[in-house]
Length: 286
Image (cartoon, rainbow, N blue to C red):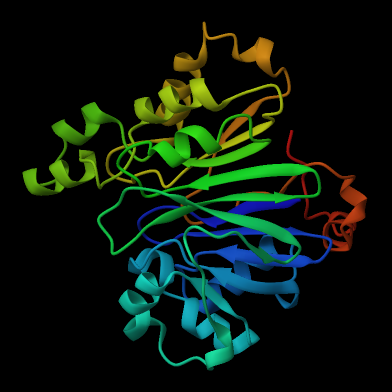
């Protein structure tokens, strides 16, 4: 399995996940042309995409869904409630490309098993994913105001996690946002703070955990250095290194693609990565 963020933050979100049978996007919150550019810059091939999964209907997650699906003839996966909420923004798609998934049922995409994970956000519905394939597991959750019971139980000991660390609470409450927006961000249906993420990672990190990517950082109320510092300090004293000496924690860039991270199999098993590596464009996650 390989994965990486293509953009991460309130200006646009997309995550690429792939393997031997192709790849897929989790959200497509950039214009289609930017998505295609960032996929290539990350070292992947847009023509190997097998679909798009939509976590929720906010525009920073669906801006490019319709245009990209039409351009590459891709199926789009979402729950019935999310389809209803995003219909107008996504626009027309053939019925065969409008796939409805049930929150309680796993489904397969690009050779991976995907299970929806309930999150807590001020949208019609919102979901993360637990992705299994190639002998490894990736947990993904952004846009959630609390760590839900689903997240708490199912993200334990994943090989990798993409989890939001949206804001620093002090920066948020001392900042220039109006009070209603501060309450929204910090509330049950808003976004996780750095400390909430650190607390969750204390529970989730196990002997299998190799990579953690902190995502969806606020441009106004956080910095990459502060998010990383807060989380790392919270993990000290909790035997994290003893649990997993291979653990690496990174921060997703806001506008740029994150370098692709490979889990499980040999890097050269993926032709896409091998070709890009030969061209000098791929740096192994370490």
